[in-house]
Image (cartoon, rainbow, N blue to C red):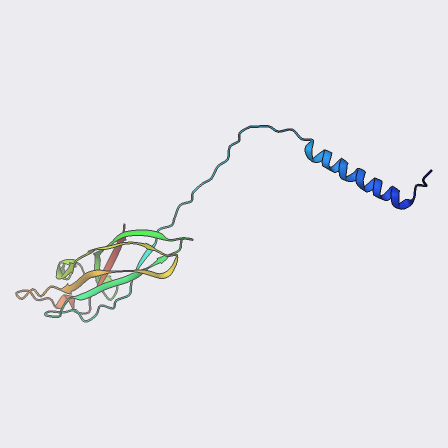
Length: 159
């Protein structure tokens, strides 16, 4: 008769564990089924058009000056901009509206609707817009002294 050693017991035990594990690996049920979930998109905040051109010293006979700039986009990702439209929102002198003696009719915006047609990346000073000009209207038969040192307030609409 053969004597059972500790080594033999260890081999038989190891073999039994492997077989038991293999049996467990094949002992499962399969099932079909279905489920649901959701995924949501966010929204975006408005972006800001920033004029980077300096327009100064407008006056009778002075050539039109360019309006151009970029965007501040505080969103986490890019935002598509189709166009930027410039308009004169007010004319002031020393921070006070100077009314009918010098107003938007004393200035001309040309090319106010500027096509961008591009994505603006997230961040400050991103992208670009250009194409509009502004100039002082020289009304030869009218005293325009009220427009001296006036400041033209421009507004930019983004679409």
